Image 1 (cartoon, rainbow over the protein chains, first blue to last red):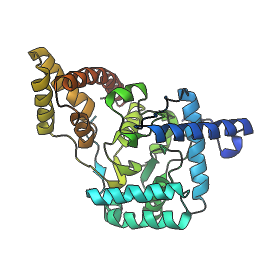
Image 2 (cartoon, chains in turn yellow, orange):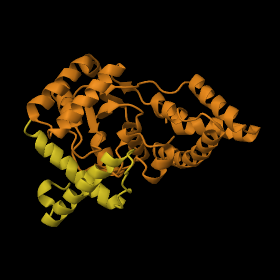
Image 3 (cartoon, helix red, strand yellow):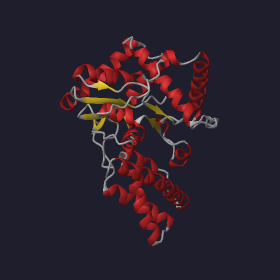
Image 4 (cartoon, rainbow over the protein chains, first blue to last red):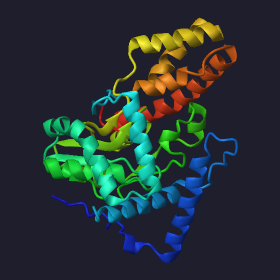
Length: 71
Length: 259
C-alpha cells in the first residue's frame, strides 16, 4: 500500500533569529490588544495575516511544550 | 453537526471565578511549575473518574491551541490525562490558531465576523495519526460558550476527522440550547422587532444554525443585550449574516465527513 510521506514538522530550532524576533513582537502587540479589549482605549485589531498568525501560534505552542518539559 | 459530548463536571459560579482568578495570577507569574502543577492536579481530582471511564491508550488527545500563547494549564491537563490513562497527545505544529482576539474576551457576533475564531489544521496528517486511535478528544482547560473548542472540533470535522468529545478541567456550561431556549429568544426578538412571518421563520432557522452547536452560554450572551426595537433589529441583522457564514462552513463539514 502506498504510504503518504508528510513533510517534517518544524521544531524550535528551525526558526531563524529574525522570525523569533518577529513572533516576540507579535506576542507583545497581541497581548496589548487583548488587554485593551472592552476598555475605553481599545486598540485596533492587529493587522496580521492568517499565515503570520498560524506561524506565530505554532511557535508559541512549541514554546509551551518546551517549557512543559520542566514539569 | 450533532452536539458534541462535553465531558466535565459543571462548576458553580464561585468555583469558576476562583479558577479564573488563580489562572490569571499564575499567568502573571509566568506559570511557575510547582504552583501550576498543583493547580491542575487539584482540579483534575474533580474529573478524574470521568476521564478514567472514557479515556484509554487508544485515545488521541488534541489540545486547543492557547489563545494567549502562554497557557500552561491546558498543556499540563493533557499531560496528566495521558499519564493517568495512556492516551496519546497530538504532536505540535499540526493545529494553529488564526484569531487575534482571545475567545474568553466574549466578542459580540458582529466583532467575531471581523476576527472569527479559526484554526489552520494539517488535516491529512492529523487524519493519518487519528486513524490509529479509536477515540479522539479535544482538550481545553475551561469550556464556557465553547467557541474555541467547538470551533476546533468543527474545523477538524471539516477536514474529515471525527471527534468523539470534549474534555475539560472546568466546565462552566455543558448543556446545549433547548427548543425552549430558542423559542424564548425568538419570541423576544419578534416582539421588539415586530417581524413579518417570513422574517420570523428566517429568525427561527438562523438561531439554530448559529447557536445549536455551541453551549447555552453563547445564546444567553447573544440574548442579554436585546431589550428594545433597536437592539432586536440589530440582533436580527447580525444573526442573518453570521448564519450564512456558519451554513457554508457546516456544508463543508457534511461533505468531508460524507454526510
